[in-house]
Amino acid sequence: MSKSIIKNRAFFFVILNVFLSISSFAQSDIVGKWKTRDIIGYTDVAEYSLIKEKEPDSGRTVTFNLDGTFSSGETMQCLTGCFAFTSGTYAMVDNDHIHLTVEDVRFVGFTCGMNKRQKEDFIKDLGVFYIYKEGDKIRLIPSSGVLQDDRDEMLYTQMANNFYKEWRKYDYVWQNTNGNNQQEIINDCIDSKKQIVLSNCKVVFSTKRDLEEFLILKDDKEFHYVIYDSHNKKVSLAYPKNKG
Image (cartoon, rainbow, N blue to C red):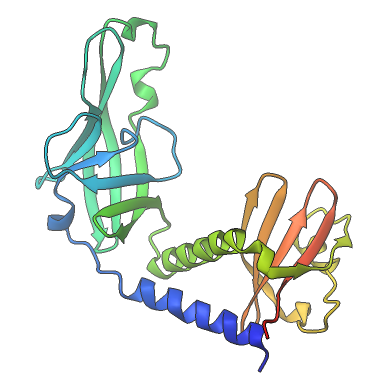
C-alpha cells in the first residue's frame, strides 16, 4: 500500500473520530447569553460564531430564552450612531439543529433616520442551522437538516484548510484545460504518475480561493485533491511527496 494512501486514510479517520465524538445540543444547552460577532439576522454572513458570556461585557450578544424566543443586539456606548436590535423565535429541530426566525427589528440612535434599510428587509425565516461545538464556542452553520451532510461538509472544509496550510508538501503536474465545468476540467486532468483512476472518482467537495478552485475527489479507497487555476487555465492533481 502506498504511503499516500496510508496518510490519507489515517487523516480521514482521525478527523472522522473527532466529529463522531462531538456532543449533541439540547435546548437547555443553548439557553442563555452569548457573545457574537454579528447580530442575528441583521448582517449577511455565512455563519454565526457564539461564545457563552461568563460576565457582562460590551459588544454584540444574542440571548436564547427558555420560552423559544431570542434577542440580539449590541451595547450602546452613546446615541450618536444607529444601533440595531433583532428578536424572534427559535426551535430545536433535533439535538444538532436549530431553526431561527427573525420577527422584529428596531433601530436606536440619532442617525437612524439616515438608514435606508427597511425593517421589512430583516423580518424573515433564516432557516435551519447546524450546531457545531468547539470548546466553549459554537458555530451556527446553514444546513439542510441532514446531520451526515453537515458532518461531511465540516470534514471536507477541514481537509481543504489543512491542504492550504501544507500545500508545499505536494507535487503538481499542470495540464492545460479549456473546460467550462468541473467535469470537463477533471477530464483534462491527467494522472501522470499512474496512481489514480479518475473515471472511478466523484467530486464530493469544492471551494474557491482567489483564482483557484480546490476539489476533493473520492473513489472506493481514498480521497484525492485537484487544483484548478482559473487564471492560467491549468489543472493538476496534488501528489503527497514521499518521505524517506
